[in-house]
Image: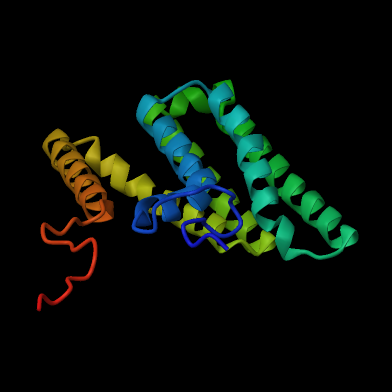
Length: 192
């Protein structure tokens, strides 16, 4: 068995690459967060959220699939998740209604859509028995007031970006193999 191989992925990484070992299985959840946060920041049209909803649904089903052993249980998971996301799509449609658009500005609508997405993500995570999906929902809940506050403070956004870059650099530096200057290649033999 290859010790450098990450279990279950089939990819080879250095043993010291902690970041890659953490990143690989969490890519779908990070993508969920990034897609939702980009939606808050860019304030795209409603079609963005309508397309994003089935993507979240597919990731949720894939995350919970292995939690259910039989075909009937898995089919139940698909039905429950599909109904939850259909209800969310209906709520998104109601938010995009022309009567409501006259009352809400674009910022408020984006934050409301992310709040709905956070609620749907958390509920589906509970139903799929996938703690990472629940965690994405919790982070999205926390991001709504946080991002609303950050939009008012550009200096704080710049400071947060510097912290993220510094943490990324630190994680990269820690994952690099350490080389000793006096590493013996063969044991020394005593001279007679």
